[in-house]
Image 1 (cartoon, rainbow, N blue to C red):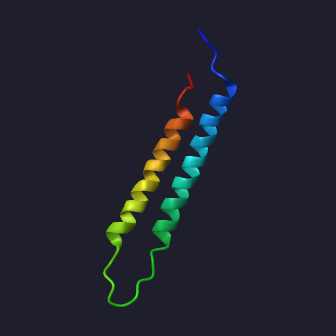
Image 2: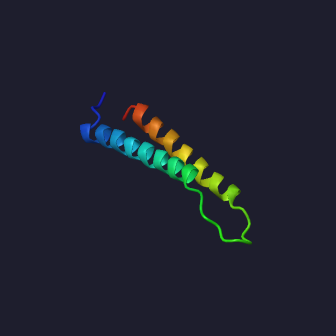
Image 3: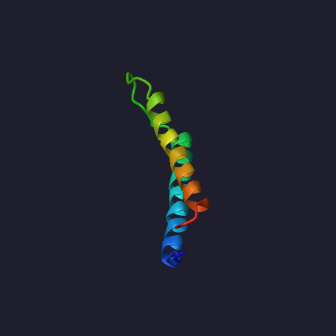
Length: 71
């Protein structure tokens, strides 16, 4: 069996950690800082949910990268 390059495993874990951090920040700031809307503008609640969902997807991808074995 061939050896997996060490750099590949380290890069995979590093980018997994970056994805988790970016996803967590996206969810946190989107949830706590909804946009200030001027009068007469419709609600953008459905649009906010898209970003929160994308943040959770990034967190899930990051977790998968962290627990996966490089082969």
